[in-house]
Image (cartoon, rainbow, N blue to C red; front, side):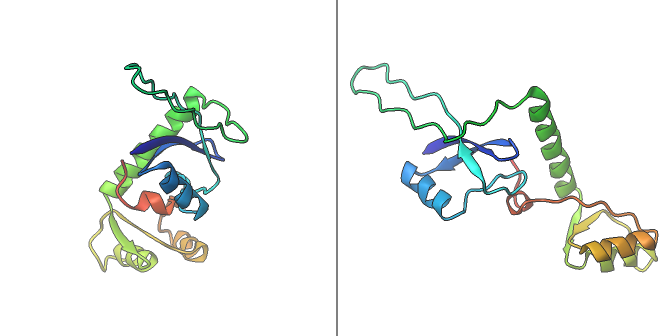
Amino acid sequence: MKVLNLCCAQDHRFEGWFGSEADFQSQFDGGLVECPLCGDKTVARLPSAPRLNVSGAREPKAAAPAPAEPALPATPEAITMQAMWLKAVQHVMANTDDVGERFAEEARRMHYGEAEERAIRGRASREDAQALADEGIDVMPLPLPAAAKGRLQ
């Protein structure tokens, strides 16, 4: 198992687990590696500590080359904000019903007393969200990358 430290263009830091270096390169070349927070596919490998072979039985392998443009170190504030965002998203995902494309319809049904009120999430176009707001129905956009719509760690 190859664990790599990765960073997207928005400076979100995350780990990627791959079966091998070739597996990482294949997924990276195929555009399958993306930031789990924002969905950005502009991902760079960060330097990581090389594995130390203290037994002396083998020569250590050369460290992986650094990315072409090294990312700036994440500030403690950025790391804290990223963790808080992820915690908020986890809470929303765990405590809401996903109604998918029927979001606007279901929100209206609850607002007008045709359905039991509950916490829901789903997808709505900008026009649908604006129409809901015009009707006095409070909605809050929460953009999620595809990777975050599954099980969050």
